Every structure is written in structure tokens, then in C-alpha cells.
Image 1 (tube, rainbow, N blue to C red):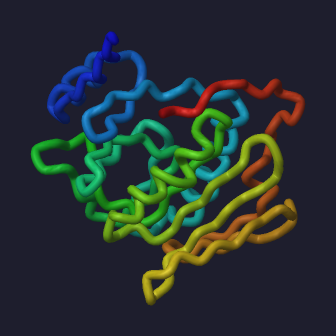
Image 2 (tube, rainbow, N blue to C red):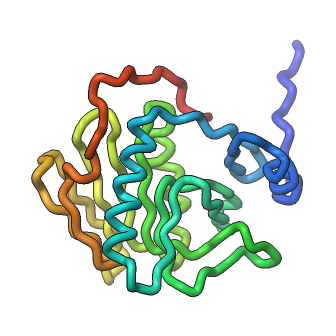
Length: 201
């Protein structure tokens, strides 16, 4: 019997060196390098809408807001990833020895794709919860009006509120920001074809 060749494990240093030279973005998951899928326009529109709401609300507050391209290091799970939208209280905490990778987000939002839905809800959320500063998570469906809002309570429980009404107001807990669900979906093209892709393994 021929044994299947084991996947090669990469060091974090090998990943960072390769990522610096790559035209595409990859995640690093405890030794594995995974290509991040390309996104549809609706995905980017929704992430941009949320970034706009946060940027206006927090204009004079001590936070930095990042969309799509800011790398995050999660040391306890040995994961490098690029959340869709990230809010970080200043001062930024960088990974030691680097100035391109942060470690202390208080709020993260992911726009759900078919290829990443389960990963964002399960494995990635589990990893995010190991970050001490992380207190709030927003999962936004790009195919229908639906938002899952998770907030960490004072007793370290995560409380979920679902939103399906486009007129409902979402009030964030980790930062001072409120917006209407329909604001997240402004200019979304509901006739846009939906991609069919397998979920990452």
C-alpha cells in the first residue's frame, strides 16, 4: 500500500518570508499555508460599508480601523489571518519584531462567503476568543440580510443576537458605534451570481 504524502509543515518565518513576496494573501494555520479565496464585489461592498460606519463614529476616538489587508497574529493558536474589518484600541500591539502584524483587536467582523462560512463561525471564532482584548464579533451574510452579533459579557460568556430586519439598529459594545442593518447592505447587488466553492480544510 502506498501511503499518502504528509502535508509539509512550514515555520512562521517561512510563511512571513513567502507572504512578503506573494501577490496573493494566505493564512497560516499552525504550520499550514492556505490561500485566501478571492471575494465577490458584494463582499467588498459590505466590508466597506461597515468600515465607513466605524470610521465616522470613531473619528475622534483612540482607535484604528482596518479593512481586509491588516494581518493579525494569534499566538495561542499559531494563526496568521486577515480579518475583513478590525478595530484596535491604541496603542497598537505589534507582534514582537514586526511592524506589519497586530495582536490586540477589540472588535472583528467577517463577511461570510460560501467557502469560509463554517471556518469563520467555528475554528476562526475559537481562535479569536483566545485574544485577551477581543470582545465583539460580527458575522455578516452577503447572500441575504442576516447578521450575527456576538458580545463578550463581564462574566466571560458570549451572547448572541441575530438580526434579520433591515430596519433594526445594531449598537456595538466594544466601541461607541450604532448603525442600521440596511446601512451594511447599502448598494449590495442582490442579482449578483453566487460563487460555488469548497470550504477550506
